[in-house]
Length: 144
Image 1 (cartoon, helix red, strand yellow):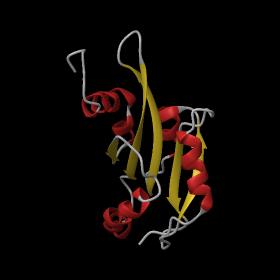
Image 2: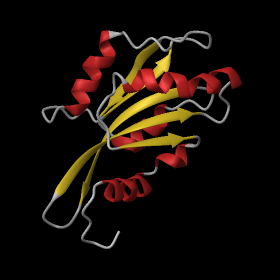
Image 3: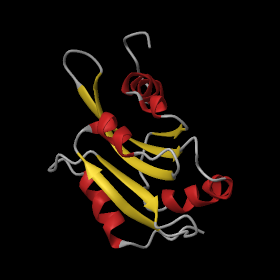
Image 4: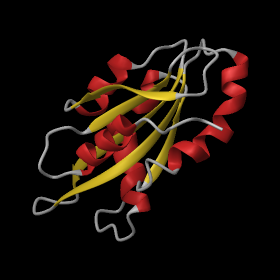
Protein backbone atom coordinates (compact mmCIF):
# COMPACT_ATOMS: atom_id res chain seq x y z
CA UNK A 1 0.00 0.00 0.00
CA UNK A 2 1.04 3.57 -0.66
CA UNK A 3 1.10 5.94 2.29
CA UNK A 4 -0.95 9.01 1.34
CA UNK A 5 -1.50 10.25 4.90
CA UNK A 6 0.41 13.55 4.56
CA UNK A 7 -2.19 16.28 5.33
CA UNK A 8 -0.52 18.55 2.75
CA UNK A 9 -1.83 16.23 0.02
CA UNK A 10 -5.46 16.80 0.99
CA UNK A 11 -4.88 20.55 1.46
CA UNK A 12 -3.44 20.79 -2.06
CA UNK A 13 -6.31 18.67 -3.45
CA UNK A 14 -8.86 21.05 -1.92
CA UNK A 15 -6.87 24.01 -3.27
CA UNK A 16 -6.92 22.66 -6.86
CA UNK A 17 -10.66 21.98 -6.60
CA UNK A 18 -11.46 25.44 -5.21
CA UNK A 19 -12.80 28.14 -7.52
CA UNK A 20 -11.29 30.72 -5.18
CA UNK A 21 -7.63 29.94 -6.01
CA UNK A 22 -5.54 29.97 -9.17
CA UNK A 23 -3.87 26.67 -8.27
CA UNK A 24 -4.80 24.18 -10.98
CA UNK A 25 -2.45 21.24 -10.44
CA UNK A 26 -0.61 19.26 -7.81
CA UNK A 27 2.17 16.69 -8.06
CA UNK A 28 2.82 13.74 -5.74
CA UNK A 29 6.14 11.89 -5.70
CA UNK A 30 7.58 9.10 -3.59
CA UNK A 31 9.85 10.23 -0.74
CA UNK A 32 12.64 8.01 -2.07
CA UNK A 33 13.22 5.11 -4.46
CA UNK A 34 12.60 2.58 -1.68
CA UNK A 35 9.75 4.38 0.07
CA UNK A 36 6.03 3.84 -0.53
CA UNK A 37 5.19 7.16 1.15
CA UNK A 38 3.91 9.85 -1.20
CA UNK A 39 4.50 13.52 -0.57
CA UNK A 40 3.35 16.74 -2.16
CA UNK A 41 6.21 17.83 -4.43
CA UNK A 42 4.76 20.85 -6.21
CA UNK A 43 1.63 22.83 -7.04
CA UNK A 44 1.08 25.46 -9.67
CA UNK A 45 -1.28 27.58 -11.71
CA UNK A 46 0.25 27.09 -15.18
CA UNK A 47 -1.79 24.03 -16.18
CA UNK A 48 -0.54 20.96 -17.98
CA UNK A 49 2.32 22.81 -19.64
CA UNK A 50 3.80 23.86 -16.30
CA UNK A 51 3.17 20.41 -14.78
CA UNK A 52 5.13 18.73 -17.59
CA UNK A 53 8.21 20.76 -16.61
CA UNK A 54 8.09 19.22 -13.11
CA UNK A 55 7.91 15.57 -14.21
CA UNK A 56 11.09 13.52 -13.80
CA UNK A 57 11.88 10.85 -16.42
CA UNK A 58 13.32 8.60 -13.71
CA UNK A 59 10.30 8.65 -11.40
CA UNK A 60 6.73 7.55 -11.07
CA UNK A 61 4.38 10.32 -9.94
CA UNK A 62 0.73 11.20 -9.63
CA UNK A 63 -0.79 14.52 -10.59
CA UNK A 64 -4.23 16.08 -10.25
CA UNK A 65 -5.11 18.81 -12.73
CA UNK A 66 -8.01 21.20 -13.30
CA UNK A 67 -8.48 21.66 -17.05
CA UNK A 68 -10.62 24.47 -18.44
CA UNK A 69 -11.98 24.39 -21.97
CA UNK A 70 -14.74 25.98 -24.03
CA UNK A 71 -17.59 23.91 -25.39
CA UNK A 72 -18.71 26.76 -27.59
CA UNK A 73 -18.47 30.56 -27.63
CA UNK A 74 -20.88 30.84 -24.72
CA UNK A 75 -19.69 28.26 -22.22
CA UNK A 76 -16.55 27.20 -20.39
CA UNK A 77 -16.15 23.95 -18.53
CA UNK A 78 -13.75 22.87 -15.84
CA UNK A 79 -12.95 19.20 -15.42
CA UNK A 80 -10.42 17.36 -13.32
CA UNK A 81 -7.98 14.70 -14.48
CA UNK A 82 -5.80 12.23 -12.64
CA UNK A 83 -2.39 11.71 -14.22
CA UNK A 84 -0.41 8.55 -13.55
CA UNK A 85 3.13 9.33 -14.69
CA UNK A 86 5.67 6.56 -15.24
CA UNK A 87 8.81 8.16 -16.63
CA UNK A 88 10.69 6.33 -19.39
CA UNK A 89 13.63 5.70 -17.02
CA UNK A 90 11.55 4.64 -14.00
CA UNK A 91 12.86 1.57 -12.14
CA UNK A 92 11.13 -1.76 -12.79
CA UNK A 93 10.06 -2.38 -9.17
CA UNK A 94 8.47 1.06 -8.94
CA UNK A 95 6.55 0.44 -12.18
CA UNK A 96 5.32 -2.87 -10.79
CA UNK A 97 3.79 -1.19 -7.73
CA UNK A 98 1.97 1.58 -9.61
CA UNK A 99 -1.28 -0.29 -10.28
CA UNK A 100 -1.64 -1.19 -6.59
CA UNK A 101 -0.64 2.27 -5.37
CA UNK A 102 -3.00 3.99 -7.81
CA UNK A 103 -5.96 2.69 -5.80
CA UNK A 104 -4.57 4.32 -2.66
CA UNK A 105 -3.99 7.61 -4.48
CA UNK A 106 -7.56 7.52 -5.82
CA UNK A 107 -8.83 7.31 -2.24
CA UNK A 108 -7.39 10.81 -1.67
CA UNK A 109 -7.66 12.40 -5.14
CA UNK A 110 -11.23 11.18 -5.44
CA UNK A 111 -13.12 13.26 -7.99
CA UNK A 112 -11.90 13.30 -11.59
CA UNK A 113 -13.41 12.88 -15.05
CA UNK A 114 -10.68 10.84 -16.71
CA UNK A 115 -7.44 9.11 -15.79
CA UNK A 116 -4.51 9.89 -18.08
CA UNK A 117 -1.67 7.35 -18.12
CA UNK A 118 1.49 9.15 -19.23
CA UNK A 119 4.83 7.60 -20.21
CA UNK A 120 6.19 10.59 -22.12
CA UNK A 121 5.66 14.29 -21.54
CA UNK A 122 3.91 14.53 -24.92
CA UNK A 123 1.15 12.33 -23.46
CA UNK A 124 0.16 15.42 -21.49
CA UNK A 125 -0.49 17.81 -24.35
CA UNK A 126 -3.68 19.72 -23.65
CA UNK A 127 -5.60 19.32 -26.93
CA UNK A 128 -5.86 15.48 -26.98
CA UNK A 129 -6.85 15.53 -23.29
CA UNK A 130 -9.61 18.07 -24.00
CA UNK A 131 -10.91 15.80 -26.78
CA UNK A 132 -11.09 12.92 -24.25
CA UNK A 133 -12.82 15.17 -21.70
CA UNK A 134 -15.43 16.23 -24.27
CA UNK A 135 -16.13 12.58 -25.12
CA UNK A 136 -16.38 11.67 -21.44
CA UNK A 137 -18.61 14.67 -20.75
CA UNK A 138 -21.69 13.34 -22.52
CA UNK A 139 -23.52 15.77 -24.78
CA UNK A 140 -21.35 17.12 -27.56
CA UNK A 141 -22.85 19.52 -30.07
CA UNK A 142 -19.75 20.16 -32.11
CA UNK A 143 -19.33 16.71 -33.68
CA UNK A 144 -16.40 15.61 -31.48
